[in-house]
Each structure stands twice: as structure tokens, then as C-alpha cells.
Amino acid sequence: MHYALTGNIGSGKSTVAREFERLGIPVYYADAAAKRLMLEDQELREELISAFGKETYLPDGSLNRSWLAEKAFSDDEQLERLNGLVHPAVHRDAAAWRRANETAPFTLYEAAIVLELGRQADFAGVIVVACPEHIRRQRVVRRDQTNAAAFDARAAKQWSDAQKEAAADHLIINSGYELLLPQILHLHGELLAG
Image (cartoon, rainbow, N blue to C red; front, side, top):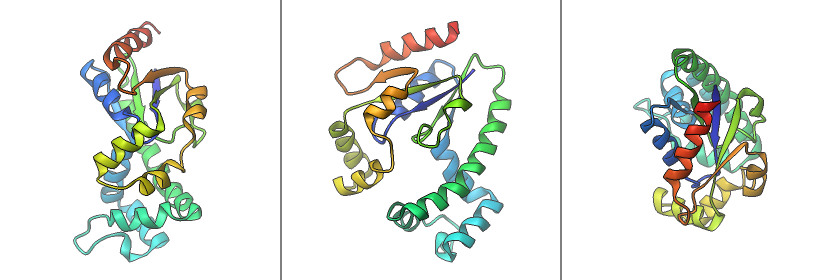
């Protein structure tokens, strides 16, 4: 079985994913894969340069992340164009990863915008990591050394907390007030039981 693990920016989905890994569950980190593929996948590199220009990559060959993020997150059409190039490459990479992990009791696909892309049907279920927006904002501003406006711009591209929670097959609350590990262990047992 293959489950989506999602949540809005700053919800703690990566923290939850790492705990599942400690329990022996393979996790595919879609955002990390996207960053890796934008560097390693030559076809994707060429498509990004064609779509966004030579500035997409720095002279040393590394991705000009801040420039590309600023361009994509300031314009819905540009973000759609970027996603239209990166997501198919990630989808191919994830499919190969899943084949390599077929013997696992179940696998997790950790990504922020599974629901926004309408990909629920690709998974046996959707696990949402939920956390109130004001706590997520504090976490992201601290973690990324950014500001509230940058958080708000990124958060605006995602479904609301209420929408994500309503679409969840399984919910993990990570507000800092509920114990996280017991929730993960309970869900782990539930998913193992099928």
C-alpha cells in the first residue's frame, strides 16, 4: 500500500515522515526529489531553461533557487508552468522508487500539494498532518529565516487547513499540544493491519 503524507507548510509533515522511517517505513520526499531532479535530470534542466531562461541555473550549474522561487511564487501562471515541468519528472522518479520498495509493508509519499493536484486517487489513503496557521507561520519564519509575508505567499498556494483536514483519511495533529509519537504509533499499527 502507498499512502500520501501531506500537510500545509510548517505543519511538521517531514517530522512525521522521519518517525515513520524510524519504524522501518520507506518515505519518498517529493520536494527533495524535485530539487534533486532539477539538478540531475538533464531533460528537466533543459525544459526549465527553455521555460524560464538561462538565469534558472547559476554559472556553477547549481539551481538559482531564490530567483526561480521568486519568479514562480509571484505569478500563478509561472507557478503552473514550473509545476507542469517538475511534477511529471517527480512522478516518474517516484514510480521507480515505489517499484524498488515493493516488499515494504507500506510506503509514504511526503508532499505538500498532493490534494491541490487532485492526486488522492493515486494512493490507498491520505494522511494529513494538521497544525493551526499561526503556529505554522512561527515555525516557518524561524526555520527558513524569512518573514510572515513570505510565509503567507507560499501558504496562499495551498488548500486551507480545513479543506485538507476534511479530505484526510487519517489525521495527525502536530500543534505542540498533543503528543505526536503516540498518534504515529497508532496510525502505524492501523496501516500495518490494513
